[in-house]
Amino acid sequence: MAASAKKTPSQNGTTAPASPISGNRIVTLDEFIIRSEKDFDYATGELTGLLRDIGVAAKIVNREVNKAGLVNIIGVADSGENQSGDMQQKLDVYANEKLIECLKNSGECCAVASEENDDYIQIPPVGSKKSHYIVMFDPLDGSSNIDVNVSVGTIFAIYRRKSDPSGPATKEDFLQAGVKQVAAGYVLYGTSTLLVYTTGRGVNGFTLDPSIGEFCLSHRNMRIPENGSTYSVNQGYYSKFDLEMRRYIDNCSDQNYGLRYIGSMVSDIHRILIQGGIFLYPSTRKYPKGKLRLLYECNPLSMIVEQAGGKAMNTQLKRILDVVPTELHQRCTIAIGSPAMVDELKAFIERYSALPL
Ligand code: AHG
Ligand code: MN
Ligand code: MN
Image (cartoon, rainbow, N blue to C red):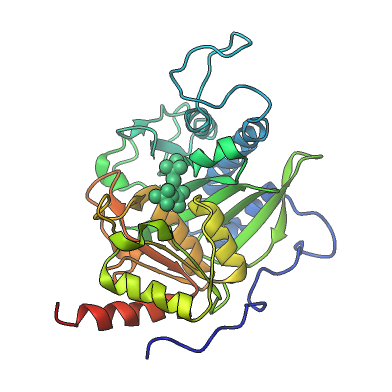
C-alpha cells in the first residue's frame, strides 16, 4: 500500500525561530546578502545588486497591495480613471512595471521575462557595465485574491545568461532548465510581508519591519517537514483529474488529511514550507498540460522547496527542475512539498497508471 498511516501534524523541521546571525541583533536583508556573498559562485556584488533591486520593488509593491482596499487601484488595467482622476491600473501590471523599473537600477540584469509580457524585454546597460543575468518573474501571484483581501505574492527566478554579455540577451538565456537557476525566491504579502530566497545554499526568510522599512532575517535556514497532514489542490476540478490523481486525493481524504487551498500558489507553498504538506496542480480538461507556468512559477518555487529539503515533480514523475523549456510561458503540472508526500503520490501514479484501462 502506498497509503501510509495517518501522519502526525509536523512540528519538527519548521523554520528556525527568529534568529539573527549572532545574538539578538537585527540583520537586514542587505547585510545578510553581503555577508553571504562568499557563498555565491560568481562575482561579488552582482547578486547583491539583483536581490537589492528585487527587495526595493517588493517594498513598493507591498505599499500598493496594502492600500488596495483604500484607493481605487483595483480593477482592470484599461478601465480608465479612478475617482480622483488618476489612471487606474491593475495591481499586477503595476507590480510588473515596478519590478522592471527596479531591475534597471543595479545594471546587473540584461533582460527580464514576466507573466505580464508576451515576450522578454531587454534592459538597457548601465554605462559600460556588462550584465550577466536575466530575471523571470510572476509579478503578482494569486492576483484574483486582491479584491477579497487574501494573501498574494511575487515569484522570481535569476539565471546567468548564456549569450555573450556584450550583446543583447537571447531567448536561449530564458529557456534554461530550472536546475540552472542561480537564485530564486518569493515575496508573500500576507499578515506580514516576507521575502524568502535561496542561492542554492539553503533558504532564508526576511520579514518586512514596516517601522524601519527593512526586511529583517526572521526565518533562518528554513527546512520543510519530511511529512505533512494537509494537501492543497483545487478539489472542485476532481472529476476532471486523471484516475491516479483522483485515487491519491481519495486516499488523502481516507487518511483524514486536511484540505488547504488558498488559490495563491505562493501562499500555499509558504504554508507547506513551514508546516509540511503537498501542493498539486495536475492536468485538467481545461489545462491538459497543467495551468501553472514552468519558468516563473514552478521552477523558482521548486528550487526553494528542494533547497529546504522537499521535492517537486510533474505528473509524468519528472523532476520539475530538470524540464528543459521550449516556450517562455510554458505550462506544467506540478506536485510539490514534503518529500514523503511527493514520494507517496509517485507510488500512486506508478501503480494506477500501470493498471489496464
Ligand atoms: P496568477 O494570479 O499569477 O495568474 O496565478 C494564479 C495561479 C496560482 O497562484 C494559483 O495556485 C492558481 O492559479 C489557482 O488556480 P485555480 O483557480 O484554477 O485553482
Ligand atoms: Mn501566478
Ligand atoms: Mn500573476
